[in-house]
Length: 252
Ligand code: ATP
Ligand code: TYD
Image (cartoon, rainbow, N blue to C red; front, side, top):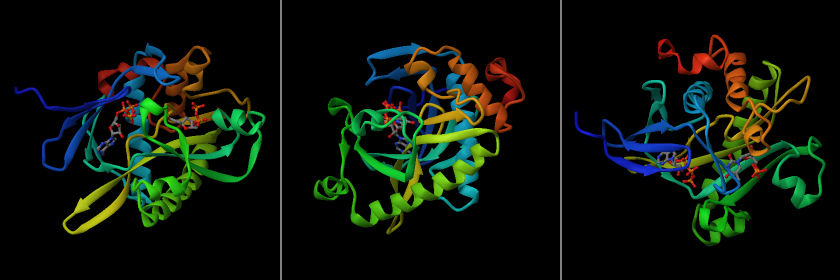
């Protein structure tokens, strides 16, 4: 069988040419990075879990009418997605203070924010994804005003939906990062959710104990990283049991 064409290899995923024009295969690796890739590790089973969790969330979002790039999961580590032109902005939505906003604004970790806050970072590894304002985004033509409006309203809808979804299984959605892209359909262009939503890109705390169930376990050397991801999957009803199931072929 001919080897597929690799389009891009990032830190956590590989994008291959898809079976039809306009599609890509998104492959989830076990690699974990933090602090602008200065810290690296391989976490066995992480890619399988993120593939399943992202599939689950994107499917639910599609059902409530949020347009996403997701088409279907292909196997344990791969999903078929629509190819989009990625808008070079990372969109962060926060409900509770954690991570960089604490340092930047002198907030206490765990402090509820007065309302949900949407922030933008310019997607540029060499510059370490700096925080930018809407002014920069439109001035440098990274996105139009209309696209920013669409992104903000979709992000707030996704936040409402995911906050409820996680709360129902005893998890508090602290913050998360989204990426959006332009989907060209004939003469039309639509803003759709792309990339992934997983414990790599969200902060998730147990509602009762505040235990971290996300990538902060890796960032802060708290241990049991994949076990925590597997617990998120288990609570969402995606996986039957603990971390071992992540590598169980029967889960296809
Ligand atoms: P960076 O986003 O800075 O490249 P990364 O190395 O962590 O960071 P990965 O998540 O490993 O990125 O790789 C996935 C890449 O594919 C990202 O650049 C993401 O923007 C891009 N991508 C995600 N979904 C799509 C899509 N539907 N069409 C085109 N590109 C996509
Ligand atoms: P943030 O507090 O800005 O940065 P850090 O994770 O470095 O402390 O992150 C807010 C949320 O967005 C958090 O859940 C992690 C996620 N995120 C990513 O997944 N990728 C990124 O490049 C950034 C900046 C944030």
